[in-house]
Length: 124
Image (cartoon, rainbow, N blue to C red; front, side, top):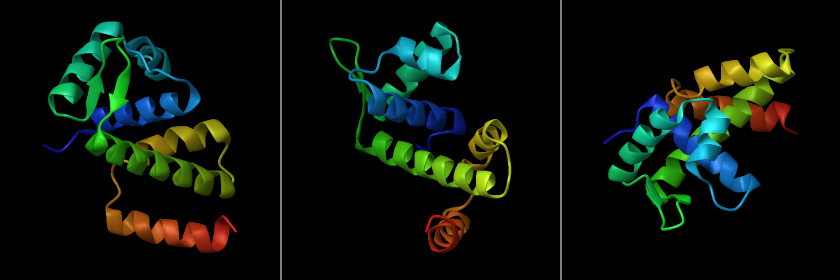
């Protein structure tokens, strides 16, 4: 089953948090995304049921292989699109917000073309 945009945001947040600290908990996601505890609990149950995450006996949230794959894809899109928008002169906050909106809607073909130009012309 394909994960929806909201699920992608959760997976991306879990990956980002896990890069900053050991042991991602639901409260970390609440704080990162600004959603209520009940909303986060509902989504985490869905992601667990769909085998994108696992939650261990210490309530640590772990990305399973398919969840990690999606999270890495979305995070890469976010980082590259943010960099491109900043390169174009967009302020940091707007670039972050707009990248978050765009990252979910691009086809792989379009993103690959953007990434190629980014690597060749911007990232140098």
